[in-house]
Length: 89
Image 1 (cartoon, rainbow, N blue to C red):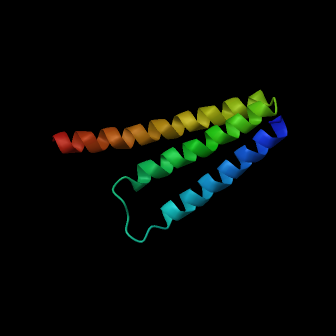
Image 2 (tube, rainbow, N blue to C red):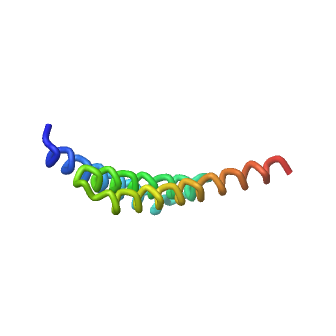
């Protein structure tokens, strides 16, 4: 497999992830952890972007995407921790 083929697959994965996020945001009945799932999905998009950038030797874009993904995951954990704290109270 070539780098170009991998890059194409990563682009397809990003498009599929974006479509899933769009569907997630359009749920008829909200899900309990929809907000967390959305943050994790957005983090996945950032990580796919980082992977694609690394395959193109663009470390600046890659590391910025990794940092954004980390912030999104932190946000997801904050919500989960808050929910757990509420359940314990």
